[in-house]
Length: 204
Ligand SMILES: Cc1cc2nc3c(=O)[nH]c(=O)nc-3n(C[C@H](O)[C@H](O)[C@H](O)COP(=O)(O)O)c2cc1C
Image (cartoon, rainbow, N blue to C red; front, top):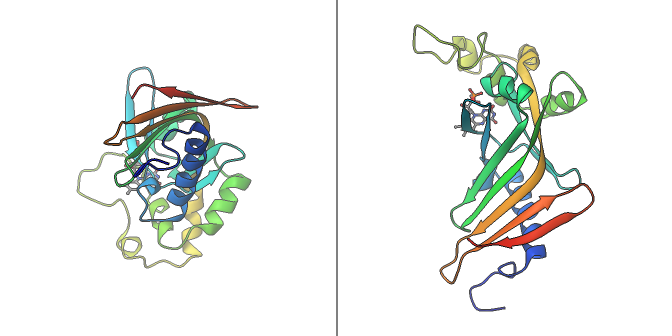
């Protein structure tokens, strides 16, 4: 291998493996740049992106997932327009991923049961507001009571948050890879068909 060039530089198979390695790392490590992708969805009039926390990665099912509040605007959009994308960038590794796919909302089912049970006391705070995220307010507020703001609730009291909790599974259809390198950028595209993965180079 040429000096300073990673082994995946000119190898589509290795890039594809690297993508899953980076996603797994992003899911497991809070300080990884891949831990906080931008999730983009929209309808015919408006597209919007927002940061989410990567909560799971499953290569065999070609899916990723994150948690959200069922009352949030993005959930309303996904219901009618499941086509969406996730954007990742690792500044140190100089790797960008643009992942396209379909989002599926899980609410009050086995998937949400499993995820909710793993959700720690502190994280449950997000689901304990009385009003929907994005609601108008006359005053500046977190939307939480003082006790909830100060984490003064028991794990039993936090169970009510399950009513607002959902898991968005994102089924990957395509991945575009961009690797920035002084010696020449590399761009690749992967179509994730049911039975096989189509891999091709693009001009960066
Ligand atoms: C660091 C960070 C992590 C976030 N994680 C999530 C998340 O995992 N799920 C989520 O729904 N919103 C998360 N948010 C909030 C969203 O970015 C967004 O503000 C919120 O979901 C409302 O978006 P919507 O009105 O488009 O539904 C996070 C924001 C930041 C800054």
